[in-house]
Image (cartoon, rainbow, N blue to C red; front, side):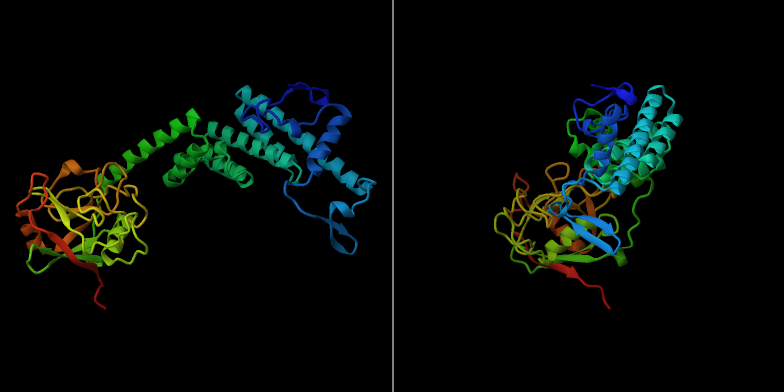
Length: 413
């Protein structure tokens, strides 16, 4: 559609009540029309109360008083109010002129000049809180974020996108542009958060989805390189310890003690610790307590590992984490390079529950598939005994290996 009068030829967005970005299309209700009607529309845009607003505050000579619609007379605004509305309407007209000028400059690829025009549009914007003004202000902030992306002024992109989000916290364009800028500034975690939320808000937006997938791949590659270049150097003496007492057949229980890697994978380590202590409240979907006590070590593969942790079904198909049935892979910081490492068993990426395994030997083919979250520090004799047990074709030990007790070992005072 076209708006005439003193505004000349200006396009209106027919598909949305929001300004198109970065072309600068104006929402119908915020767009002043030509002649006297333009002034009236501009005044209406600035004078209308914000959506959901209650009583307005009216200032008088003796203080403030709340005036509801019922309290007002039918004579219309006072001369002072008319004058203020005229001032604000003129401000709005100037702001929209600068916004349109910026849009034309952007189309001509005069990016610095477009930025100046949109910055001036913001400075001219009336200080109201109507829904129309908010949408218009968000539109200008988004335009500035876009042109600053083009100019590679990433700090200003973050500033303008954040200002837009303060008025519209679920604006996918603002989140997307801020995410791109934060990535360029090296703020990878904040960028991931913005892009993830933008993709959630606009799951069918091809550009947003593509960028989010690219970012995830890039972040994974960076994490892999960081882990390879800077492997964790665990201070075992400073780490919390948990134990499992295991009875093999009718023999008295023997103990395995593990140092938990809270320094690199705190969430995964805490899951194991609480399942050892049994302190997590409630029960699983099958009505079992969140506790390893009474569970079995159900799988043995000599030369590879021993597995346990299924306190539901005792075969690796059950069990739950303290965070819900399953939780995501936290970090693949350590490699499966030696005997005694403690890791999460799973059914694929990010399907961690309560099942765990202890390595009998290095197994580097498991790297980046299973999260290592601790290591054996006591109980090597028991680990050797477990590896020698006879097993069925399904790798189940032919004698019961029961966790008779488990918990956390507190550090000495």
